[in-house]
Length: 465
Image 1 (cartoon, rainbow, N blue to C red):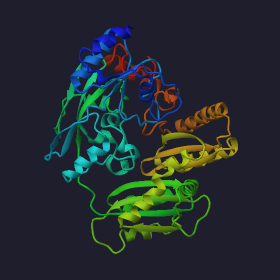
Image 2 (cartoon, one colour):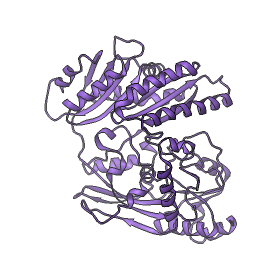
Image 3 (tube, rainbow, N blue to C red):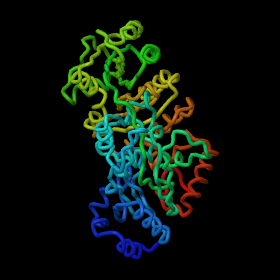
Image 4 (cartoon, rainbow, N blue to C red):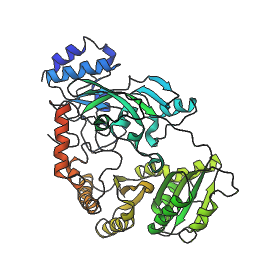
């Protein structure tokens, strides 16, 4: 590995401002939102075209230089972390929106476009890009595709892979592959682009994408519902699917989350009948006809499963309801040492699974507070544990490693996933067998070797070769 020769060759086609070597910059770009790893990249390069990405990858193969593809670095699994003198290849300067196609409809853009900018461009053309999440203001489209991003509207629109019509990638070999189909029907063998969606930058670097759009939800109502227990939450979910034609999101959070959000953000619980161990449900639904009380049949159907039901079609009140859910992560992060898990469970098992988690924390982690929230409509729950900053950091890490092993054992028992949205990266690599069989992992390793035989791209992420 000759890093100096690599840099010299890079300088032959990249400008000085496309290569950063300052330690402070490198450390900043070496981390995503995980804090479990020591940042240790060697430099950052900022290509401005697919051709420059290809040249960088070819040089990396020549000099055996490992590369870490980097987007907005908003993930929580260490997928964009550089820990071993890797060169960080940032797509942030490849940020052009290239084409709008009204007939599909779709937008073609480079991988460095910020998610929110794509959403805004779609709205300018009176269409909607429906994949949405808290980090949309800073995440990049390429990273979204590489992690198959989900968000709050998966129950209605599915994950990002449902909205990718085509991509351009530079493989680990340095080959440029164009999966550019704007075709609605194309039944000609393997759909190879799907391999790159969710691959966390281990097979290729996505440089461009064509993303499908849909109609903008015009009139919506937001329900905020309180329930006595989680089994009643699931009954509300069943009834919503029966009575509501277009459910845009079905979110859930426990009473600990509500209390913390109200405390940290100076909000007031809108329910007068407040009790401990209450669960809250947030539903957004599209309205297709004028009604004085939207979906009254749904409200009547959950009378036996809800304590109180609030609803609004007014924008300011709807945004207020969403704050109780959207501000939870920030409230937890402000309150002490915390540990996050993003997992998914088959919906039919969620009630028993949550009882098991509560029993585990009550019996073995009594100095931790449990916060449960997430996208219950698609089985995705965020499991957060919070303790005081007075807790010794090494003891905290040890206890959370033990907790993860117990949690993942439960997930395996219920045929769930240890990562619903943020991938495996470095953080969850030791636990991949809790979700994937040995045979599946071997097939994934074989695919990695086909596209990246020298293990140049994101080495050590997802699994070790």
